[in-house]
Length: 381
Image 1 (cartoon, helix red, strand yellow):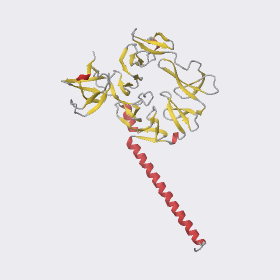
Image 2 (cartoon, helix red, strand yellow):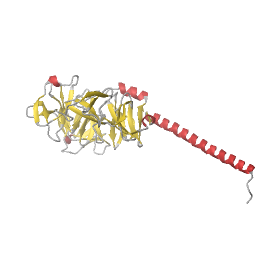
Image 3 (cartoon, one colour):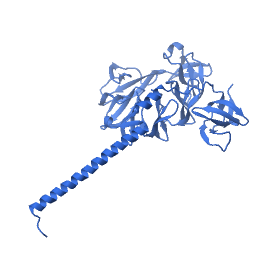
Image 4 (cartoon, helix red, strand yellow):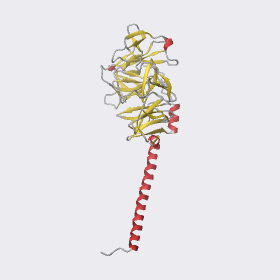
């Protein structure tokens, strides 16, 4: 074999260097094209998603509708607001929400050094210095008492006293309550006069926000208006958590184990592509996609449109209820069992019947308008 001269070696080094530069250039162009494509896909989807701000976050969850707790790569926990602004750096904290009276809750922090839990300011997300020396468990909870027809306080030892209007949280017109303190009791709503405003027909019920509240029937969640009409059908899951309330006209929901975002008319603003979306603020959400945490931002035009759109108002009051002995009722596009099925309505759901023609009724149910069999609906007296 011919021995390489110094000149030959220099040529080989130059060729190898040129090849390396070419490979790096191709990789750079590919990354730029991929990034541009990703941004375009996000824009077309109505949102952008950035992981750079939360690159050290390994997990996150809402403590209430103002504060989130995050866990970093070392396993330490800290606090941040709903838009991802860190208010307390990660440390040896344990956080939990406790309640000492109805509709009033506090976030507390514990450390190995603290003799008592510390109160967390719900608005700023900062850990206070004031010691919190009350029990960690609720002292009393309000339930409806069917026997007396009153809203009453119950504690660990049972009945305490009836609730008086003076004890209500100011500004709250409708409050979710269970029909009794028994396990599996149905939920409904009482008004500020402490009378039943919406019947006890839900498995779970959340508070009203922006005119809508999340309720569940037959294992699925939907949203109702303040007059009890179904505005967003029962098509969504809870993913093991309480459903979120509307904020700025938007709400994260779960469907088929994926998260997306709806507006007040039930329209899809962010597609169901996320593994997790927490409650948001001003169109920004802490979210997880593909195992990475980041900030999801709804495009400005969609956010402005959602923020100014109200829930549909039909002007009609629900006058019938689905009575199928437990199964769901099919809604059809036309008055025929062979017509397209629009959705399924859970048993016990209140609906609006606009007209009846023989064996079929034309109804409104949330965002849907269609037909159901009159055999499976009963007029509300």
